[in-house]
Length: 187
Image (cartoon, rainbow, N blue to C red; front, side, top):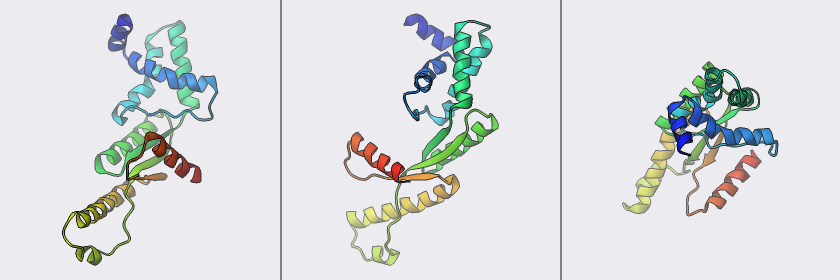
């Protein structure tokens, strides 16, 4: 493993191509209708998507080049991206930049954007909130309203194809996955 670590740290694209190997293998295995991958941060995503082509361009022939070209073919023909972002300034700006980059470089088509952890606006008038006594309840309502208002601005910028609400409370990962699955299935 020491040799692999040295190779991954010195050769361009090797670390990325090793990481991309598992999801691409799952596509090749054809066991799933969809292969869903939690991608690296958006600032690094393009380098992962470029890695197979980069490796193929520096390896003149042989099995490594063949594997890299096969991976590039999967990314060029069998893939699409659905990006996710929370509805706040930095994630929205990064997502919009990633969408533009994917399109400009024809890396992988972005077919959707999901807004995650969206706080739904409260159906309550400001004057009603003003009548609440000072304290944690009023503070919670005011915070909720401020977050929802701020998110509304960023949701307009993002134009998501789907939103996932903020899931309040103590939920296990299974419960979160089940609720999100139900939302996606209903959409």
